[in-house]
Every structure is written in structure tokens, then in C-alpha cells.
Image 1 (tube, rainbow over the protein chains, first blue to last red):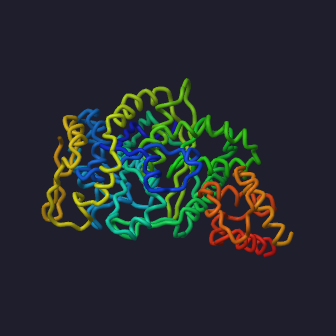
Image 2: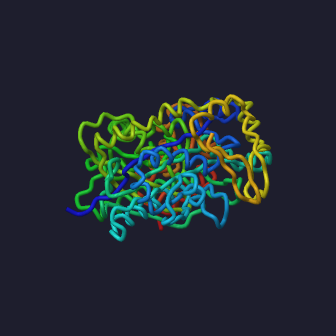
Image 3: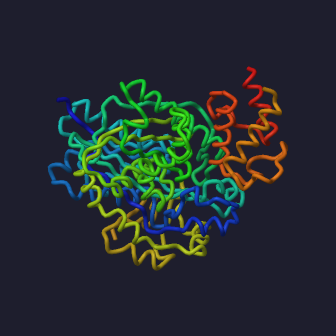
Length: 418
Length: 81
């Protein structure tokens, strides 16, 4: 039997504070007559002492701590997948590698392709394992993204309006190896679709721009064509029958519902009742965590995988179909096998309990944060962070060994476990 | 199929996706956003319209029209391309 590869362990970190999205929409005066159809509830908001490094380390540390010294030394690659980079040259992986205390014989780098980055990173790691060039090696793939925009500027507020309710923050850490307890990747079973399109982008460090219609259209086209490319490679693949469950990149729940409907009509001319039932059964479990943290960009498809493992009844191994899309754009449909054992391992991370412990921001606290006075900006040289701008959130954060950003000294970010 | 027939198909799809608009007059100078439809509903209406008039095109080719009349023009042109 050939070697297997995939995700050995997975953890999600959803930050220190959350915001009720319905309240935000009402506050912004957004006219959303059928808000419930958009399937949004809460989103994570990054506080000043949090950045992509703290999110990543807080997600990965429990996985690394659970390894023996010997296994820890076998982590030979740390891939950070993000569109929230903090430097043009130095990768986030260097900071993460340091604070996780990993060995020096390790490839450290960062990759970007909007929300597709996590899948690019996972496939790179899986293929490193499958190549057999370093038998027994492990790779750490960490998706970490947060939205933090300079909303003191009214033009930026307007640019951001279309995605403010859905933009979240979060990190997903995945230990990839030849003992894939959580997701065994189906080797060679994947399909891609990509083309140049200006649907959404981050043209500056604290700005995001986009066109909701064009982004949705590109997503729908990619979903259909990436699956068809998958089906071209995989004999007998059938969207309806091959996958017990699905996880799609989720900007917000309503979007994947639209994509699922699009696919079911295109492929099968399915009727609305059948589509609704299929969505509820196979795709809605993946929303478990996404509805609480918002769009986590690179990690969102894996956040969906974690959510479905958290919530479904799994009596036997089954196949999951995953769809990843990143604006600009590139996409991939791929699959793997999950098992009841992997489900127990995922549930043991206590992800839901950790999300429950977030500080629920009031709208006043949120608005104050958006002014960004306490936040380190891209390119800043020196700074000290006052961690207790929202005292209740800081109090709750401490005492659990989580990493916090303290400041900058000569562009060098300073962190401390608190 | 002429352009006004395509416009009628679009309006019919809008009323099917959002039944609240059944009795509201809809003119071709209005956009779907002005009718209060969200992005998911807008894409569903375009997808259903393409299916109804027998066109199979990438959705991104449907981007650009600013109102229902322009959308009908675009679909009409694509159908006769």
C-alpha cells in the first residue's frame, strides 16, 4: 500500500473578542431585509495586542505541545498562509517558529493567494510528505488572517462597507504528516480553476476593496469548473454521491448556499426542496465555527472542516469534499477521508469552549477600536501597546499561556506569553 | 427571442426569487440592488435567467450592467453572438 498523507492534527484559534453581526448591520443602517438568509451571526475582532503572529501561535501551540520532543524535531517546514502579512521580506513563519520553539533544520516561508492560500500551503506540505525525500518528517501549515482597517478615513469606510459584516479573524493550524488522523488526503484527487479577475483585493496594508457581485460570480464559476476538473481526474466522481460532507471557503454562509444551489442546478437540474435538504445535510455543519468568527480567509475551508467534525455524527470513515477559492483568482476542489477517531481528536481541542470565552464587544468598544489609535500599523518602527484598552478582554486573555503583542523595537515585533 | 422578452424573463425570475416583489411595478431603469436584492439573490436571478433562455456562460461575463435594461441588452447580445 502506498504512503498516506494529510492532516495529523488540527486546531482553530478564534481570538479574544467577538461582535454581534446583526447589531453591526443595524448600527450601520444597512438595508438587509432578508438578513437571516445570509447565515451570519458573530465575527471575531482582533484587539490591539493581537496580530497574525499571535493568532497563529495560539492556534499551533497546543498541537506542538502535545508532541514528544522527538516528534517536535521532525517538524521540518512551517508554511504560513496569509493575506495579512506584516513585512514584505521577513515571513510570519520566522516569528511563529521562534515562539513555538521548533528546531533549526526547518523551511520557513509564507505564501499568498487571498483566501486560497491555505489550500496552496496544505497541498505543498502534503506533496512534501508524499515525495518521501525526508521519511517521517512533519510540516506545520498555519492559516492566519485578520481584517484591520484604517477606518478613521471616511473613504476607507466606504470601500470596506461591503465586507465589514463578514470580515473576521482567526487562525487554523494543521500538522501535516504520514499519519493523517484528521484528514487523509485523496492522492491525485483535485481540480483547479484560476483566471485573472479584479474581484476583491488588498491594495494597501489597511485597506480592502472589492465588488460583491463580481466576487460572487468568480466564486460560482470557479466552484463549477474546479469540480469539473476534479471529476475529469477522478473516475466516477459525482458531486451528489461521492462526498458524505462538504466544506467550502466561506466568506459568509449565504454565499456557500448560493454556490451549492448553483452547482446542484448546473449539474443535476435539482429542485429547490432537494437542494435545501442536501445543503442542510452535507454543507451546513461546516458553518458551525464560521458563523462565530466570520470570514477567516485562508483558513476558512479548514475552519469548515473543523466545524463539521465538531457537529456531525460520524459512525464510520467517510469522504469530505473541500472547495477553496481565493480572489484574484485561483480555486481548488479536493477531497479526503475523515474518521470517528479523527473526530474525537478534533473535539478534544475544545474549540467551541474557547470561542465562548471571547469578550463580547459593545458597539462603542468596537467603534473605538476601529479608530485604530492603539493599533500597530504596517511599517511602524517603534511602539508600545497598552493591552488593557478594553480591560475585561485583557483580563480574560491572561492566564492561559497565550501569546500577546507588546510592541515594536526597530521594526522588530515583541511578544510575550501571558 | 427578442430583448423585451428577455427583460420579461428577468422580471419573472426576480418575482420568483423574491415573492415580496410580486405586486411591485418593476421598470428597466432600475437595478436589482435598488429593488433591495442582496448579492446572493442577484446571482441566483442571473443564473435562473441564463438557464431559462438556454445560455451556458461563465457568470463573470454577466458583470457590468447597471440596470435591468442593460442586463437584457447584454443577454440579448450574448444569445445572438
